[in-house]
Image 1: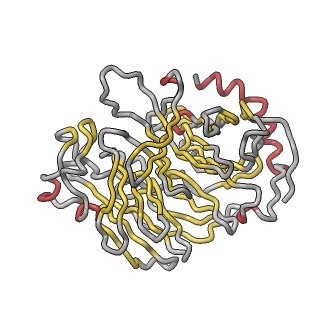
Image 2: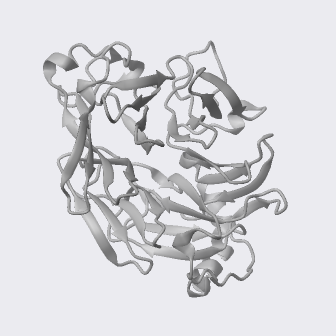
Image 3: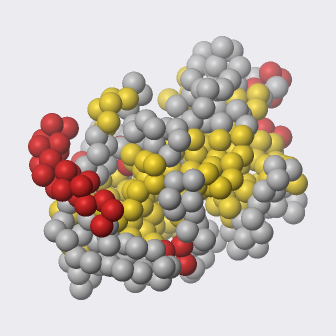
Length: 384
């Protein structure tokens, strides 16, 4: 692995002695066709994957050096902004290694299991008798009178379904009520899924402002939390200490005349107490209306993705910012407008197997580094 130093492109803050060094991956949402980027700590572009279609919504680097990405296709649910039709495995040089097609896919998230199987989200319709019992939401906001839900499936590399879980058969129409200002078109509205140690699944519902854990053996919802404490949250992750880290957007905040703000929280699932929190002293300095992610790093720092704002930053446990980056790629989109938004960011350590033996000098991207190094200031000013 060859790494060289060049001048920064879009890193606006870097405290080397306090930051967790590694390589950060992100995918601009409005780019069409899609492209996924890898940068070093200085913001230097070291690799890119050119993709065959627009991305829905993220890419992740696998241990073998390929990436998994969700690709948009015309489908029965193409009008939904986070739908797609394909999850593809793309090689280091952009070749398609494997793909799975289904026009019901919701590409908010997926899980690649250690056995090679994939856990995915798919749309399905809620039977009218069940839909009528679901509490909350804005009246009349169903999709042409229909409420959608999800089937969670585990599929083999050959596309065979080996396990499935139908959300509306297990969720509670009262306990899992839709937020008062939520839409009734989708219930419960998953935006993240994670496999826990032992195989259970943790799911985040933006439309009900809850996080639940599904027991894989019994298929019951064995844990739920969040009502009245979080809202429109994203990306809960299970930490090595057994706690849950998540990005709390606070979009549907109902406190009396509050300033809008977002925060990161760490929750003890046993006590359901918040044991760590990060938010800005001036609350509006950290406010992300939708999407967002948080990743706990090996040195105890946390990397934060201000998704809608195209910003990524790293903080210490005490909340000190030690690294910041602003995505320099702006694209025009009917849904996002002129935007540098990204859904999530992923930090990979220098010793990550997927980077082993790769040229990370950025030599092949020299023209991109020069282009965006020169244009970065102008592009950022144009976006404001």
